[in-house]
Amino acid sequence: MEQKFDPVKECSHKILAISDTMDILNGKWKMSIVACLCYKPMRYSELLKEVKGISGKVLSRELKDLEMNELIERIVLNTAPVAVEYRITTYGNSLKELTQTIADWGFTHRQRIIAGMKK
Image 1: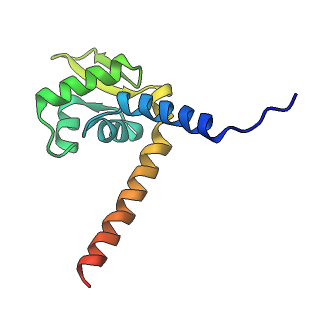
Image 2: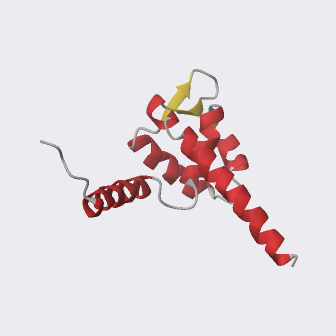
């Protein structure tokens, strides 16, 4: 039996999926952290410098949330003194394309707004 396409049901499923995604990636900083780690593993201090404007306390909290959701992993390096590195997981790397899409949209939007101000 052929199933009929129900746009209301389809929309509801998408809204639920978007809500789930936004719950995990909520806030101002998580996507920036994920984007950084998609390109290379970084130590805490490197992330603190790279993600402009984030405080140490907030970075710690965001890293814990991302680790809990299996998007990043915390690696304790065998060094003296002990150092910690954060890496994107294979699962977290599935967000790389999304971070690029968001970055592309943001760049285009910024150009559009700036061009509108010049008129």
